Image (cartoon, rainbow, N blue to C red; front, side, top):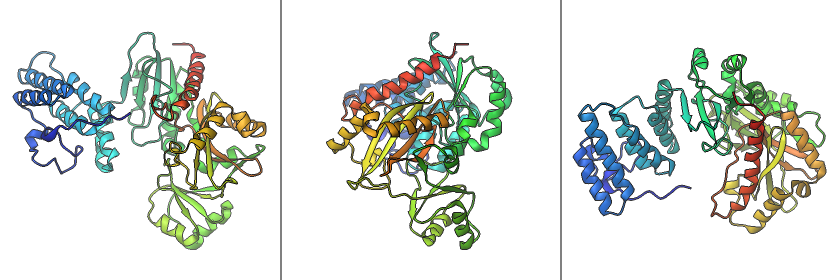
Length: 463
């Protein structure tokens, strides 16, 4: 849960790194002072304002600056970096950015500072700057280790650093029980594969097949030389591109997938675009979306060819066009179910009920409507009763055909009882809710998924 950041008055910027506007009255010196005495004065001000944590942070900065000025043996910025990361983890990105900039002023080779500054910039839409910061981070460092307990399972996590599309693995691989060795393989040379810390197994977290596609040869080389088990092997992930899942699940009883076509660039003409749709068996309306996007980002419902042409004219790179199916239930609401598969076994994760065809849990009003949460609870508690045995047989078959160690599907039920799959891939989010929140009742069902993932890993012996 994000915490409300304290009011640091003029000693912190109101903007993230890279932005030009600062809080009124804040000078460049105040925004990132290098004078230890200035930090001691700010510490006193923070303590007087009741912000003991802020006071300690400024004192750590003062001690660090003193050590660097004296060229003391062993002088380093680790404690100051921990301060920045602490604020980052609580969601106070303004203060985190302030401290990370000071860290990089003292030592520009701290990859985690560049990495988290990139995340801060991306969160407020400064994408070009975020890309530059991220590139700087991963050119310095490709391996990040979280957790050092000797009894922990050591999991090498293959990640794509240059783009989103990684499996959200925080719940699946908690740093309290796993030593997480995150490897930005898209920045790493082949010879670095042989220089990695010891690990027990590999989890391929590059779950978006569109993100993974340009890395296919690199991932294949890694797998060919890897002596440990690889969960979610890249070739299984590759089968989950949106335009391939109709073939992937073709022939399964009671399973439907809307036809979808992939296009690499804008069609040369209106006639060429129309021919592309006809060949794929797609009629209007059409759902258009950029590749490698999730959560409805860029998703548009195009009612006719003119609307689709207008949408495509603004696109760069790969995109998908999918036939739209009106899947409203008899009560007028749209329902989107999510099932998570762990080692091919299905686990219910959520049900979102919305008056709009683009259904997302966060916008469906689930927290505001008790009847929606109750229907979801029945699904989570007993999906066989909620969906019926026929549907659950179809879902079990989907899990076997998907053949991922971790993955999932978003789907709905059609009036005839068939499962209509929206997407099926490894990037499906599963996370715990706030313990004191209105959705806390979902946590036991998330725990079942986490426990199943742990059991699956335990079947692979440690190195």
